[in-house]
Length: 178
Image (cartoon, rainbow, N blue to C red; front, side):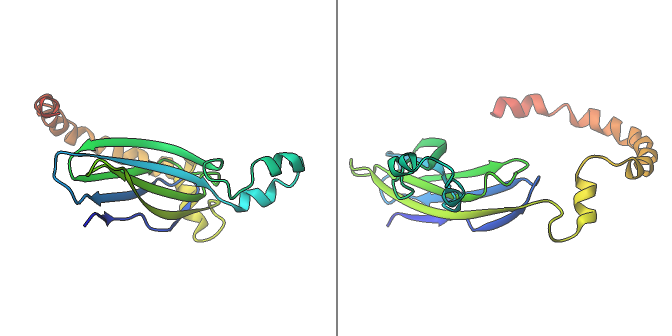
């Protein structure tokens, strides 16, 4: 049977962090048919309560229940085969991307498009709101103090630098593989 082999989980991220959501699906048919995976961002419905300043006619025209109005397609990947996997990457998240992310797979194995969906909720906390403020300061703008102790080790990097040049030889081969 067709099933999700990896589903995204609800998660909480600190503002400024990178977030990754994984979604993998195994189709039921032969390997020669096509699968499509889509990531959608479904705006958090709490947003609607904040928009009571909108004209009531506008709210009536686009009620929250109406599908599609408050959902944004982020990415689409199509493959030919019976397995599909795609990671959604969000860099340096800020509170606006908080909401529900939905992974939809369109399975066209027997000529009919079947839709499979899984959802996960991403909550974004303001940096330094909870947890350890010192961490967030280190991760934020470079402060003058940590920069000073950081400069002596920079000299040690000159020795591995030679090794770094040797390591640079393989990439041309690697790019051929791609």
